[in-house]
Amino acid sequence: METGGSGGRLDVTAEDVPADPGSVVTAAFRVVDRREGVAGADLVLTADPGLTFEEDVVGFSRNGGRPGTFRGERSPGDSTLRCAGAHLDVYDSGDRIELDVAVRVGSGLASGDPRVRLAIKSPPNCPPETYGSGDVTIHVKLLVPHIDKVDPQDVEEGGPVTFEGSNLGLVRWAVFADENGRTVITDAKGSDVGYLAKSRRPPGLANGCGRVWLSTADTQDEIAPGNTSNSLGIVFENP
Image (cartoon, rainbow, N blue to C red; front, side, top):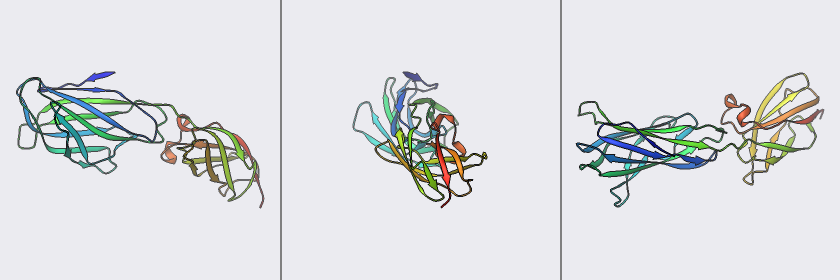
């Protein structure tokens, strides 16, 4: 789906992009001169939560010509990329410039439609003006982990646990709960093949029957139903 941006001198359009959690995709914008022309401008790109910019550059091609790059600077956290004084050099109505930027999709982003936004602004030595703006929607595919098997079924404190299932490649956390309702979150690691993950039983759990889940969230605070697996039973036993 093509989306159009608002603007004065420039029209900005973009195509939506499908993506898997944990992947790197290209957000591309087409900028067309409407009137008056633009020589230099500041490019300000911002990414919604769950997205980060992969590099300090924005690629460009002017009127289908040789590609080049505008070098910029990322903010802490890589959620904003600013290219100051970019030489757009579009002067005639219909002149166009293609812009593209590499964006990383967070592995904990199990679903949703975050956006990358572009604002083309006048440089500091000119009156404040937004020449054009637009956004790219990233359609993130739903990849919720699923556990089919836990091995071993009985595990001592600190003992290794292996999980088999599907969509486990991006797993980062294992959530263990004992029969008293105490929950402990610990590190887990998914394998490249996607159907295996590993963790260890953390301390602080009462012996007896319990449950375990896996999550692909980037941080513990982001663990939620949309990025967390089904649960399976497990037995916590004495050493």
